Structures are given as structure tokens and as C-alpha cells.
Amino acid sequence: MAASDALNEQQFVRPSPRMKKFIRQVRTQARGNTWYGEGGGQCGSVSDAVERHFGIPEVNGSFTSDLGEHGHYFNRLSSGHVLDATADQFEDLGADRRSIRQGRGLRIVRPQDPDYKRYVS
Image (cartoon, rainbow, N blue to C red; front, side, top):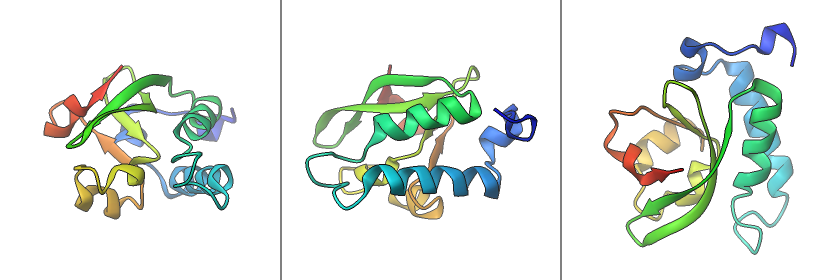
């Protein structure tokens, strides 16, 4: 991890354009042509890359949509904030579509956000 990639709380709450670009590139590479097919949203591959590159711990947990619980990988900072780099795979399952579209699939969920309880570690 380069010094310029070191993460602090402010960067996590408001990811830099460089961080967003990196996450989008990793997500695109991991998904290839089959991301909604058998391979799903590739949350494991993407969250692992985020952990390796930025040092944000990966969580093997679940996301609860309006249709039930789904196994899901995401990243969580020590402050409790969730970084869901593949949130767009849940936009049709009851996730907050507005926040997902604003981040183009990248979602930061604060502990006080009503959707925070949807993420279980």
C-alpha cells in the first residue's frame, strides 16, 4: 500500500475520486461479462482487493434485502462505517437506489443510517 493510499476516517466517509476509480476498475475486472450471472456481483473479489489496497478490513457477512438474507462480502472500518463496493447488485432488492446511483454502485453506510442494520457480520 502506497503512502498516498493510506486511509483515514475522512477519506472513508467521502472517498476520493482516485479511490472510487480504483474500486470501479477492480469491480469491472472482477465481473467481466458475467457479473449478474452465476458469479453474482463479485463482492468477495472486490472487497478483498479493497482490503489489500486500502487496508479496510473485509467482512464475510450478509445483506438483508426486502426478499431475504443474501451472503455478501463488504468492508468495514473501525468506526463501524460499511463500504459496499458492489451495492448495485442489490438495488432491485430493496436497497436505497438513490444512494447507490449517486456512488455508481459504491455505497458508504454510516452506523446511524436505517440501512445499516441490513449489513450483518
